[in-house]
Length: 186
Image (cartoon, rainbow, N blue to C red; front, top):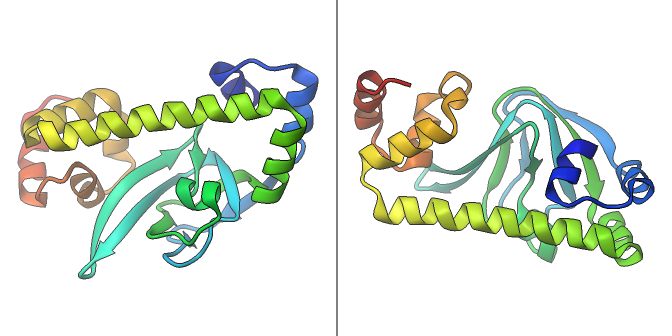
């Protein structure tokens, strides 16, 4: 975790160690809904092991927004940051283990240490940049380009996540996803 944070923004190691000491271990079995629509995200998670997905439900169909896995943050970011109810789900795909910190403690430590606030501003900027890139790809790329871009960026997920979830994430019909998967060398 320390190495992950230092790659985002290097801060005084004593402050970082104090901050990390406030994160606690948490585990969740496979297919656990960690946050549901209407619930407020009380924790920010750091993934130690496992894979999670966030998704909307529309007419009982899942629309996958994101996957999280080690080393990355997990949770419903806008619900956590604003302490407002989530509009979508966070669910474990596999058994998962995390470190987590409650909103109140995170806020307190950011107020006490400007470097922690800067660290999370930079982390949030990185998340925003990734979301804008994903939005661009969904809007501008055809299905072949979306599939190819994803295959270059995250080829390991083809063996870890169901193709149905990957197709939903890429906004590709399952039949077309299967055809692309069988014709493109990964």
